[in-house]
Image (cartoon, rainbow, N blue to C red; front, side, top):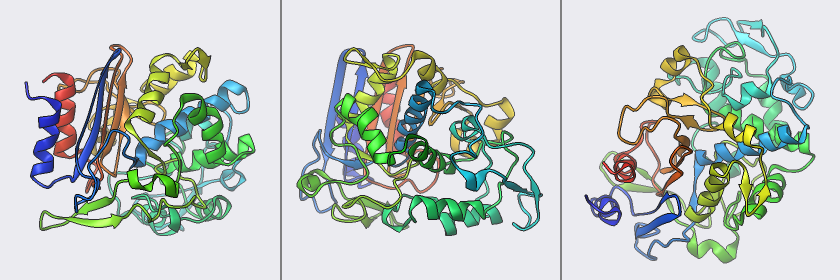
Length: 382
């Protein structure tokens, strides 16, 4: 079987990625590989402690933070979100998803905390990005690829969201992305702390996630990778440099895709979930909350309608859950997610396995790129 370094090296040599850092853990056996460079100029070799924009791998972290508030008794899964998010207390829904955004009907029921965690609140991306209500999410809320310095502060962002109708009635359909950003605002308001402060106090500090946050301090930018977008000619175009959009704390800390991190920090988070919410003997999450996070909550029809993003798999809280073994890496119960910046992090409770891949190339569509699929095949022993 090809080793991990060679698996990754093929993609560095063909120019599809400048570099990558990966971690494969099977119980106490941990393999880490760093290949290539932190940028296309080759100015610095990739290293185990290289820092990456992890994009949507932020979503499981946000879900865990929300479940901490559930464990605290501050919020409950069945609670309407209106007391913390009054902007969403009386939502309206477009009569026809393809129709005009001013042709609306009242929501049949309130949006709940569970709706946000399962991505069934009515806001987000369906398979058709051209729908009028979806276009407003992109233009008004900057939903899409992470751009932290271009998003309004939470109160202004929520005010804009309140003017956009739901695409579906609450609970009816799974829609991607927006619910994690909304959940981040709810966490901050319910806790009385900024999202960064809550993450740091309840997750990052207890787990030793010293390189995870919404910005990279100047002293650490020599470890921060550059970010690229593939072009039509097969090359890579610069999108963000180490002194770019993640060089200062943003006005809107995105619970959907704003974090930077390293393989070891993400491994610490994964180990906490595998250990049923504990780390170094300290309980951070209840076992019940971990099980709810890592259990599929979708109906078969919701999974089918979400195939563009989920490829037939289910959704827990903040991440997908494998329900069918379509490919070697699809192990029933595997939980995690991918980031549009070319990142992926998964754990499998039944085996104790953790797989993390960090690259710095934007995914051009929801389907995972070849380097990601090759990495998963290696991790699965295929």
